[in-house]
Image (cartoon, rainbow, N blue to C red; front, side):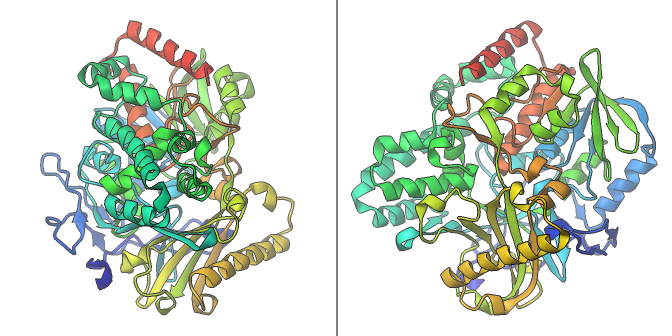
Length: 607
């Protein structure tokens, strides 16, 4: 770790005991919580070679994330009478505690609202959750964390934590990702922008001008967005206020809104291999190629990795959701686990409450669904209640594939010295980029935070795209055998390309499939989110947070601006602002609302 220039922290995290594997990386029985030590997210100034602390204090209050905080939250909920149906109306009910849902909940609570979060599982986080096995702490989903910087307006995780009086320690990642691509193309995306551009132009010297021009276009978009206070684009008082303050920036974003990264790249770059590299860059963002990736989405990721940087939270990604949940309760709101919402209750066409699988009912002024739109409108509402605009959305977008995930504990000596934290592998054929099992993404978070694994060991978290149809109609025996067979092929590829001797160094392995994701993340078909059917008009067709059902809002990756941690956090900020205006916690103009929302609906028809 000295080669990377960081001190390696040793935090104490929540220990979840009693897991017994049933199915993949989240296959377990409900754990019994066994409180251990306390982790306090605070510290000192960032110094060279030390942890970066993102400091945000509200009246000098600091949220302390205790390892038993989840147990405390559940107790506080039960003690406040939520053992049965609750006739008390909340300001907001949030279905699901993914990052988008928790950001919406905490933002609404910070505005003075009383919020109830209902989570089907026993811990918060969804795809940004965690689990523990044999001394290893695994991130359920991605370990590439955006939004954790201490500057600009796109540091949305930092802002979300600060809104409820919380802060977290982070470790700067010097390399966002190391690409290993066909024709032995190796490119490191360095934290320092000039270092990355120098490496890329060294690989493609004949495209130096095109490289600078394309990424400069990305910076135009990023700088415009990063200069604005980020609230709901559906709230006209805010939006037009921003326009009068910064008209050039708003017009810049409006210009790029209907455009995709691939078409802009082709204005400046001609080399097919370099265009394929940009496809790979965008695939990490959106699971589609650059021609299908909205320019705004691509620009945020391709620039923020250099502006704010990738920063890994000490103790693992699961700490984000745990800390937000703790802060939410500290604000006087509530979170209830093992709460499986099966129905959104409508009265006279308005969403007024939810019903759980055990019959309990809870009521609220606003219902916010952090489920996918397919789950929200296909399962939580009756078919007769599904509005036309949702049917139109599904004409433009389909469910993206899910993932096969392999979580492994390995002996540390198998990794070469100075191994990067994140790797993207596509060995032989560019055409396989979007195919199931074609490309492989690898995270090794213990390169940054050694406390996640026993001494002398590392974590490998391996992703590759996979559709649920590939795992259906199998007997349990055949299903388990196929998991091992597919995982072995993936591991063999990594052993050949990156880590010779990898198989002999595996001390723990668990494989999750799209069925695992569907079961434990409650996502239809285990989908990663929406994917355009064809070439979209940028973000023009993506729905915002409001729906055609009064009182019902959506938040998360199937809303504007789409997939990824920073995107769903942005969705959470927007949703909370719009909902707060509707229930009287923010300023509102009914006349302006009617005209503005009508305009947005019309614009989506152009997609």
